[in-house]
Length: 379
Ligand SMILES: NC(=O)c1ccc[n+]([C@@H]2O[C@H](COP(=O)([O-])OP(=O)(O)OC[C@H]3O[C@@H](n4cnc5c(N)ncnc54)[C@H](O)[C@@H]3O)[C@@H](O)[C@H]2O)c1
Image 1 (cartoon, rainbow, N blue to C red):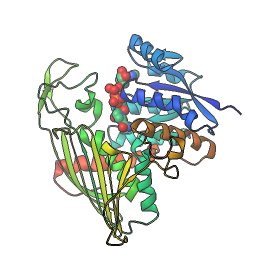
Image 2 (tube, rainbow, N blue to C red; image 1 turned 45 degrees about the vertical axis):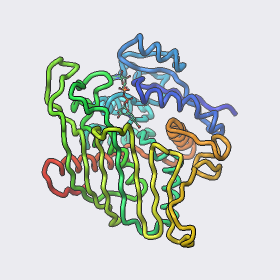
Image 3 (cartoon, protein in one colour; image 1 turned 180 degrees about the horizontal axis):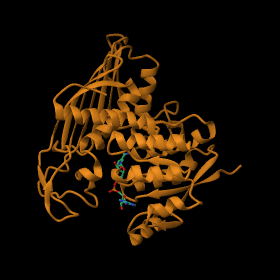
């Protein structure tokens, strides 16, 4: 039986617009058992010419320039929010009211208050919902989850995560508007905390459970920048760098650090977890590998091993090439769509849901509050 169409209406055609469109296009080829098939029904962006060019390149059937029109359309089943953070709440509320499924980019919202409204809206409407914390679906990260759940690490003592970039070091870089909305507090909600640490926090909660309390410091190194939308030099409201200590509810201790001022680093997301029996390390630059140390190994061969996560019995890998051939970043989005489509058949929820993502939002907010007060803060 051929798969049923699931009509996608995507808002925003930037970085994530491409990553998601690619995932929708590929998913049924690599997961042929799925009973639903995403159809690229409409892409929405404010500039019609650019939206039309994108639609043509990626095979979208139609274009909208106002997301409200997109949501009104009866031929759209799922709304995919790939626009900046300040648009997530309003779009999600309207889409839920119309009974649409919602796939929303991370962070869920700019703050907890917005996130709570969004969770309430999707739960009230009973619509399937998911947030694109895609790193959970990198096979090596999924394997880390499997190893932890099997108890191979034993009691976990330490969790250490960093996400480092260097693209905002120049004081001449303006804030606001196209491509630079991440530097504008109104559009982004926060700086590296919501943009980068949110990923680290989502992975951490997924792997090691909820965080209990945090103490944080943040810094805005460049205090004023020209704002592209007003043309004026304005105060910068985002955190350029953030580091925090945390306690997990299970007793593990954690450190998290993120910055856009780590010269030489473009997207260095790493985490290391140290347990009683074993440790694991993962690095986005080598995303298909998982480093593993097992203390129970014979001492003659005991040491860090580097697992090349390509064997077909490892998470998601039987879907792709032959053992030894690795996959990359874009595949995490294909896996996430596949899990979402499967969840529509089985009724088993594919996380992270809006509610799961709200927990990450709560940690981000506790971190930012702690940085202001200088106090340990409960999540
Ligand atoms: N999962 C991830 O790893 C990941 C990576 C990057 C970005 N993101 C998230 O994805 C979202 C988009 O980020 P991006 O990097 O793709 O941004 P981007 O700047 O590349 O693209 C944003 C798009 O939104 C459109 N847009 C802005 N306002 C709009 C409006 N009112 N109506 C319709 N379209 C509008 C823009 O025209 C543009 O096409 C953000 O929430 C971001 O945090 C997630």
